[in-house]
Amino acid sequence: VRRAREAELPVIVTTTFDLAPGTAMAMHLAALAGDPPLACGLATIDLVQNALAQGLPRVHAGSLRLADRPGLNVTFDHAAIDGFSVSPWEEVRATSL
Image (cartoon, rainbow, N blue to C red):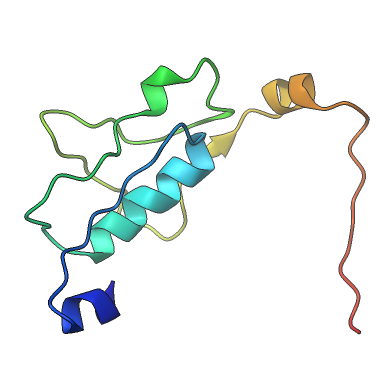
């Protein structure tokens, strides 16, 4: 966003059919862009059957309000996530090379 602004390029943040975490990240990125003169496409969450999380702010009349605290502020629906898994969850930890 900063580099685009420095190059005097417009910034448009949009989602496709992202679930709650991706949409929340896009909303935060759009907020970093300031008040963009071009519309951002962030009102797509209602088009998916299950967003797998709750807590996203709703877009109303073309605007939204993010929480005044750090983080994406979404609560994952673990039961819904389990419904999409093909096997039991297992923790995977990265190791240094």
